[in-house]
Length: 446
Image 1 (spheres, one colour):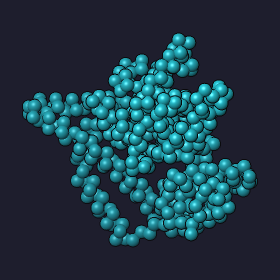
Image 2 (cartoon, helix red, strand yellow; image 1 turned 30 degrees about the horizontal axis):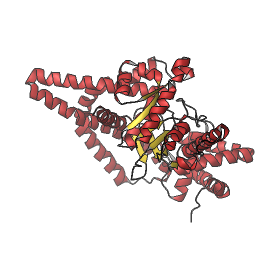
Image 3 (cartoon, helix red, strand yellow; image 1 turned 135 degrees about the horizontal axis):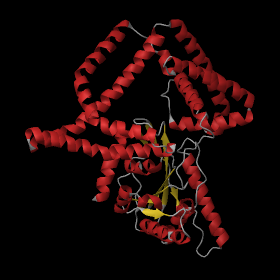
Image 4 (tube, one colour; image 1 turned 90 degrees about the horizontal axis):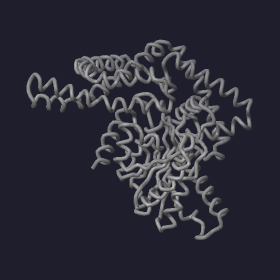
């Protein structure tokens, strides 16, 4: 019951905090399953597992988290298992206790359950996977030797701006790995056992790279995003395709290593084009917009009427929920924490402060109209919060469209020049994709 409650509340809250996109098989894997994921965003990464599975999952978490007053109570209530690490100044006795954690995790799998582990061993803000620890493979082998048909399921977590409210996060579930195909024979020499552990760990790393955007450096991200959007626009496809972005990242490595001069020239041209678009608040897709007078007036009147209708509710909603919205943002600015911990700080603060809003709503209703009014005030709190969030996001989109209209809509020469430059770059990117595509698995257009 406690686990189901935490899962429901946290899963719902995460979908409010982020724009969550999920790519996963329709049918969840049954039987003993080990979910493995990359780890760019501290506790948020573990919480996102709630979004992709309804199963009861046993989490492995670093031991210091169990000492946090509220978080530790929640982790223990959910049956999470502590992992002691040298970097947390664990004693030799504590490190020895990890054997019990491995045994408990193995028993969960033997019983047909599911566990989650982050084999990088540490959360970080690097653009690529860290070297994987071997704990996941050793737990899987322990359960497989007891007869459990363990499958390892890689989960890729890709954040656009992981520390920002309402930014995008994509959860991609990859193809599962059958552990038995790596399991050495019973009684095999220690060196054979270690080689099998390293082999399975390498396969886990390959599985994670297949569902994550594994970059060499963060500077590559805006480069491949701009190139992919131009390429998609040229083909008439939807931009920001995760599989295509990964292939572009792999192609970038080859391009930079094999043709450094050509790479440097194209990089400079793409980044200059991106900078010019940002100056006019536009994206490559905006360059193909055609503004008709009737459409412009329709857009303006429709959205003006909508905003006037919802404005009173928006003011009330923002006033009520300013506390859980603004305090986490201000706290994150004052308290200096690493980038990969900022979202966790904001999320947990918002989650803790939101009930105070409902207490206040109930008190106001009860004070002026009685218990029934207090309950009614609480009942309308969530719809009002959702409406406020929707209105703010819609206003942001409208404001972006208005900026684009006034910077590009009446400047035909600028728009024509940017469109010509974008088309030229798109053709060069398409030629490069034809050249490198077969080596990175890029499907060629018919």
